[in-house]
Each structure stands twice: as structure tokens, then as C-alpha cells.
Length: 324
Ligand code: SAH
Image 1 (cartoon, rainbow, N blue to C red):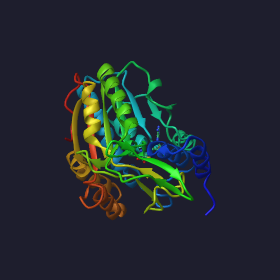
Image 2: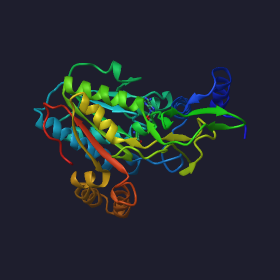
Image 3: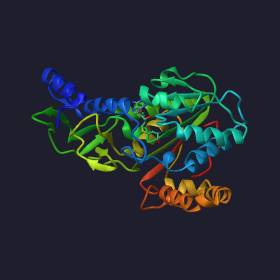
Image 4: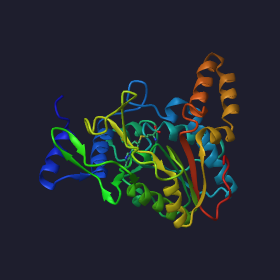
């Protein structure tokens, strides 16, 4: 196989700087990956919940609108999404929110120019490289689905951080005993600080564990199949399990109230996915089987229902959210 552009760049970097951290390797690989393709769907590398069914984004929109209404319907609220992919979740959520009388300005945090262009075809929004340019006034209604799992992780054997070198291929120099994502902790801390100061809430949905200490979770997916994360960097999606326990601690330290993590299936059931599926099937009887299959895929324990988790960060001055 001829070297990928990222492979060539990482090789050159290691040759001059010496071995690099797993986090640097992952960051460089994913930046290229998301900048050069739309990876979602049957034709792509993987499918995410909003691409399975409109019900996912709609129920998130209803969750946000309900909370906003009970907080006194502040007119200055903004919708913020981290890593919006194709913009499907935002489109579905915003439609459901409009039904509840909420039509906030839309602020999208997205680094991929290609995905920004895809989002711009469906949404009228402003784009940001990170949270620092999101306005500091008005409550924030934040959503992040499968965003945190794409952020770089550092890996350790005991106290020693593992490094990646190049020797005909990329090689990690030890056995992973633990993993942390300083990037994820920094972002969640920032979000919590903003929400506490401005009001609002954040809903984080991702696959992961609710207790730390699971060792190596770095994985690559290509064409819907698991692949070697140290092969073809930049051509495969690299993710790691989200450590919800660590995210919750970082958010709590900034003063946010934490709800969950709840299994995605339980959360969607509590939000009324059964009723939503029934009303969609009633409006389009020919799609009944497809809608039932999508609901099962999102909620069943042996599909996305248990591995994926939903966690909320809420401003202490805001009401108790639904679904937990
Ligand atoms: N939420 C979407 C897409 C998930 S994939 C869905 O559920 O379908 C991860 C998304 O995060 C992509 O849009 C990717 O371009 C974006 N992303 C990855 N790393 C990022 C970073 N460091 N900053 C901002 N966006 C990032």
C-alpha cells in the first residue's frame, strides 16, 4: 500500500522529533480523516444515531425545548452543537424545537471544512473552531453526539506515557494500562463553566463507560469493520471510549449539575420514542417496518441502547431535565 499523506507527515515528524504521543498521532490522523470525507452512512465508514432516524434528533430537540420552557423561555438562548457531522441532528432538533416555540440562533463547532460545507447546505448557522468564540451572553443549549469519542487520548503503562515510533509501520512502545483524554476534560470543563455562568444545559451522547480503568479502548473503523488503529492513519476513523466518570467530575468541579449517564435506550424510552415512532408510522404506514427497526437499533441493549450513554450538564439555576 502506498503511504497515506498523514503517514508521510507523521513519519517525517517522528524522524525529526522522535516518537510522539498516542494523542498526537490520533489528533493528526482524525484531522485529516474528517477534513477529507463524509464518513457517515451505509456507503461510508460508520452510521451514527441521527443518521439512523429523525426520532433521535427530534427527541433531543424536545428535551432542550422542554427544559428551556421550564426555565422561563429566555429569548436569548442559543443552540450550540459540537461536531455536527452532516447537520442531521441539528436539523431534526431545530424542527422539533420550533414546534415548541423555540427558534434560537445556531452556533456550530466544527473543524472540518468539508463537513462545514455539508452543514451549510442544511442549516443557517455560524461556525466556530472551538468554544472560545461562542458568545458569552445568553443561555447555551448544547448538544454533542459522538464528538468526545473522536478527541485524542493519552495512554499509559503504569506512570509512563506510551509513544508511537515508526519502523516500517507505526508501533506503540508498550501495553496500555490506562487512558485519559485531556482534550475532552478541557472542553467539558469549559462547557460547564459557560453553562453555569450563562445558564442552559449540555447533552452529551457517546459510547463509553461510566467507571474508569478499562485500559486500551483506542479503535479504528473502516467500512463498518474494526481495523488496526496504527495502520493507514488519516484513512480510518479513530475513536476511544468516553470516560463519563471523568467528564462528570470535571464538569462538577466547575459547578454544573450532572444527570446520568443513562443508557441511550433508557433515555430514549423515557423521552417517548415509542409514541414518536407510532405517530411517524401512522403518518407513513408504508414505512412502519423501517421505523420499528430504527427504534430497535437505537434502543435495544444488544445494539446501541446500552453501550451508548446520555449525560447532561445543567446550570444549577435551571430546572431538572427530563429523561433521566
Ligand atoms: N455528531 C455527528 C458527527 C459525529 S463524528 C453525528 O452524530 O452524526 C465527529 C464530528 O466531530 C465530525 O463532525 C468531526 O468533523 C467533528 N470533530 C472531530 N474532532 C473535532 C474537534 N477537535 N473540534 C471540532 N470538531 C471536531
